[in-house]
Length: 219
Image 1 (spheres, rainbow, N blue to C red):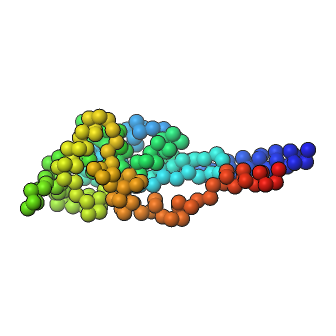
Image 2 (image 1 turned 30 degrees about the vertical axis):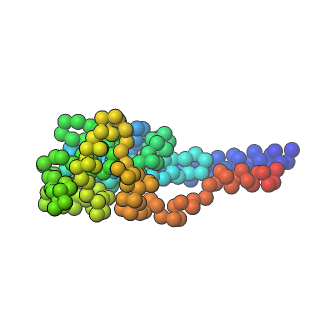
Image 3 (image 1 turned 120 degrees about the horizontal axis):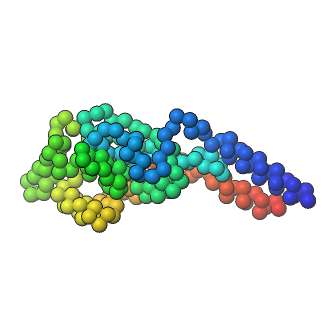
């Protein structure tokens, strides 16, 4: 009887602590799904790149995502929103990708490598040809810092990349690059968004597992 009473008290305390440690959502915008980007992103020629994601609270979790928003001629900004559990879980495989793009006439919600919105748009750059005959995308001078903002590093997309990406778009399939260079397993993403892949983040304690083990050992 005493053990049952103690177990009940511990569980009530645990649930209360979980809720108490779930931070206030006051002032933080909420994103149910990708369609909700339409209300958050006002500028045109905009791309929204997922650069971080985390959950807070013990049992009752609150999910957050951090985005880098690049909007044409406007300043680059970073945005933190609260999201649904489903949207957060769904996009764990899309770290470093553009989850939303808004041009002058259309919106796109298919996760794609960052910068896909600007490829082939003469307003932002042009295709150049190297001596070996390979083409690559070069941004116009006014957008020379875009590769840094987009998380490209030394990578520059070529025409093969562009055409393959268009094929994936026609099939409505997420594109991670010809050799999966983008996404949480991709070399380019891991090199240019290292904050998400810090070792200490990969070793977070699982409180639920600790509680289960405790009750197994003591009851």
